[in-house]
Length: 150
Ligand code: HEC
Image (tube, rainbow, N blue to C red; front, top):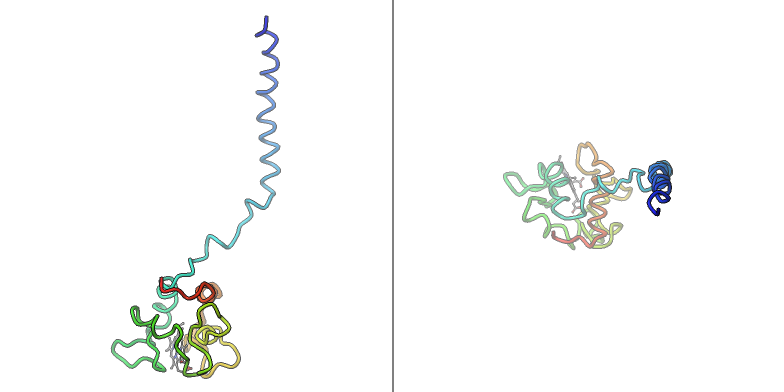
């Protein structure tokens, strides 16, 4: 006696679930959770990423202690690069460190790759092309994170 009366109810639920799912899917597809964000393409703000994505491809060709003299006394080679820039006064503006941990505005190396007004000499990399905004942002985020040696 019970099961014949339940069947129509179960049938109604079975029919209703796909309809509800379709309604929910329709509304969530226009919501923000599926909107693209820049986060997945950002590299982690580590020194190893700064070295492999900025210094190695764009800087060590000139700023190297291997073979020829490092430009402006600045070697950015792996192994010596960190100690040559973090907390080290720049030559172009001795009032600023090349990299001041936690302080992008006080970091002369960032000023040089951004080509800020007030730098001595040229925007880096010398002769261009300039770094992409993503790579400049990587350097800035690494400085903001405290310029860890990681
Ligand atoms: C084609 C050679 C060349 C390349 C490539 C190059 N530099 Fe330079 N760099 C120089 C020369 C020459 C100077 C000194 C003249 C000047 O400052 O414009 C210099 C100066 C600097 C200074 C100033 C140092 C100080 O103490 O004042 C910084 C910082 C710097 N470069 C960073 C970089 C970074 C970071 C890159 C890579 C993104 C880079 N350079 C790529 C040749 C180069």
